[in-house]
Amino acid sequence: MTSSPLRARDLPDAPPAIPGAAHRPPFVHFGPGPLTDALAGVPEGDVAGFLASWEDLPADAHLGTDTPYRFRRYGKFRLRPRGLEQLPHTAFFQDASVNRVNGGVERLFAPLCPAVAAGEPLRRVVLALGERLPGPRAGIDTCGVHQIRVVATVNAEGHPAPEGVHRDGHCYVAQVLIRRQDVRGAESCLYDPERRPVHRAVLTAPLETIVLDDRRVLHGVSPVRPAPGAGTGIRDMLLVDFFGGA
Image (cartoon, rainbow, N blue to C red; front, side, top):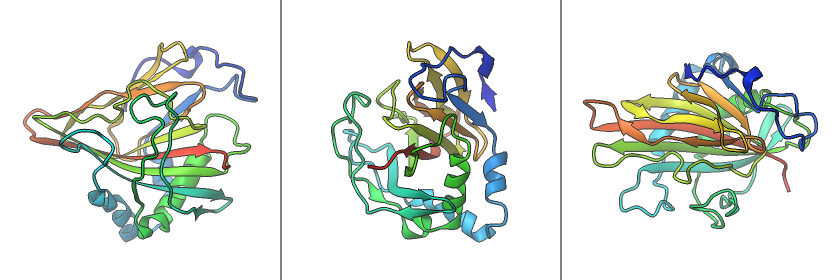
């Protein structure tokens, strides 16, 4: 795990607007251990099927490029004490104030495959992430789940975050690496509200994760390029947004 020398104690004080959060670091970054433990006991075939589902992501139709470089599926769930209740499939919306590229647009992505949405691997991963939110959990009862693949070629880099440094408009955001193959770049960086970097990391190990408080930090990811000698690079991510339901 590669990260900056910054430690939680070195972070700027968090804005006091979020009750109970002022003295907590606005993010956690951990290796594969917690999610590996969460998946312990799940049949290997179920986990393998979950990971293989990234091979079946349709192209993101909202990129505005001739050749797609991002592929994704999306689903929305109500958080239950021991499970997930899938909600009707809807468009994904971000306000223009937080997404300067696609904000203000209802983006209808392909839904999660039924086996993924109802599967034990997703349930365990989401609940484990919910236990590691870097702030208060009160009122957090809904999540959005994004399966995303970014592809880079020697002729076109891939952009995990074409909107640049941004917020997602949620309470918490979990970023879980699923696969990184023949890739260079894709450095994650977190910033304080004044856009000063507070944490840098290149996620390299499957299930390595950053969970951030979207109200207290901004974030961005540098472009993806193929590794030297490779014609194509692939970066698969599971993103989970946590927020209060309407």
